[in-house]
Amino acid sequence: MKKIKYFVVAFFLIVVLFIFNSADINSWGFYVHRKVNRMAVFTLPPQMIGFYKNHIEYITEHSGDPDRRKFADEKEGVRHYIDIEHYGNDPFNTIPKIWKDAVAKYTEDTLQLYGINPWWIEVMQTRLTNAFKELDVDKILFVSANIGHYIGDANVPLHTSEFYDGKTPDQKGIHGLWESRIPELLAEDYDFFVGRAEYIEKPNELIWKTIKKSHEDVDTIFAVEEKLRDEYPSDKKYSFENKGQTLTKVYSKEYSLEFNRLLNGMIEERMKSAIKMVGSMWYTAWVNAGQPDLSSIENKEISDAHKKEIEEQEKMWKTGKVKDDKNIIKQ
Ligand SMILES: [Zn+2]
Image 1 (cartoon, rainbow, N blue to C red):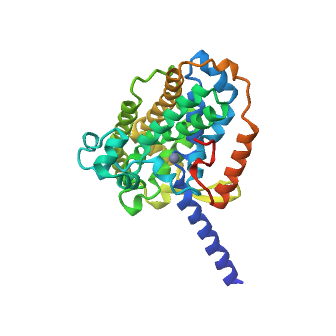
Image 2: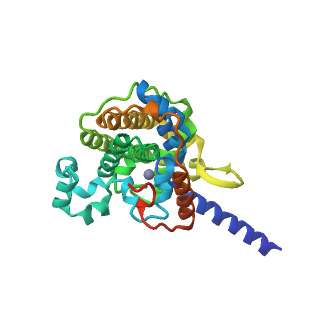
Image 3: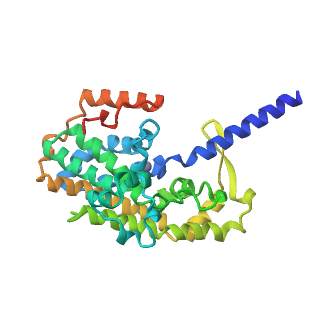
């Protein structure tokens, strides 16, 4: 009998550990990506907001798709980050900001190896402009939801660092703490007033400015962890919470709130930056497409073909099989 009890306890612990370890796989966490895409809709000008409001559920629901795609498509992961430290002590003056110049300097293999997030946002920006030119509802929505995700990631400091989840093994979990645990506890109280979307003259410059700003916060995050290390032994640092049916190991509320306090508004500021930038990039694509009249497609639903694509894609994500990343809306 005793043996069985031990077995049950051991099994339970393994399940808990597994859940804790896999908690950091979602960039920004699904919660924040949803929030960023959703709030971005309200930054849009009158000529755009009707269309986006009618499709706000699509924009919200599909904000996490790029993360889910990672499980099935090996080309996906590198689009979510850039390990800037790889490019030396003065990376922002070293890396060519234009993709083909960067390829010429470092080779495409190297760029792929250390992450391509900033360049990928530009690719998506061009696709969105084209989607507006074609007034293609499926494409506008698909690319809007997806670019919102990549812009969200560009605003996360730890997505710009090779120390993605801590500099030392005992910092593991810090990624999820910053981008999921803390915002999930606090974001309802954040002030998301970011004003109106703005036209961006040079999206490439804004993207790199954003990556640089995000990266400047990396050291602070690690410094806060170090500061709290002695004050919070393991039993104070972690707690257990029911998530659905499972008891899950999480950073304690007390530790998370203190961590956030010492970050001095950083997470709120990065979320606001993401919201404003998503709205502005959507708006810029629309302007660059010649400001097409969206009222003509405002009440149009996504096509049956796209619905089918989404269904098939979700099946593939679950089974881990994907033919090609262009499977959805021939991009
Ligand atoms: Zn991501």
